[in-house]
Length: 138
Image (cartoon, rainbow, N blue to C red; front, top):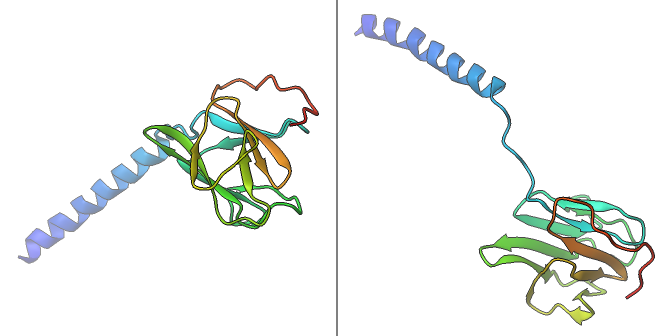
């Protein structure tokens, strides 16, 4: 029994070491969804890197929007089989998509304008930068 343990433990150690080194040198997985939000006022681009992304003023949000009219936890964008949708998380100033208030969930299309407390963000699904005129008012 002791002989089996003496042979098994070093073999197990070598196996763990091999898999650890293999994972270190392997190419990292591609991150990102290819979807982003763009602020037309200043050109800022916020990539949506996860299937669920929180927006707000809090440092715990995935996308930090440091504007006084944005709630700490303002809204959440999520991806499902049908596409991307946005949900307002009981924000003080509300969330709108194309000037329509978000009451439950609203599915998004390319070019939809999301308004969070007076801040405009355009939903973009292409990999290039959106052709949005600066200072566009809605």
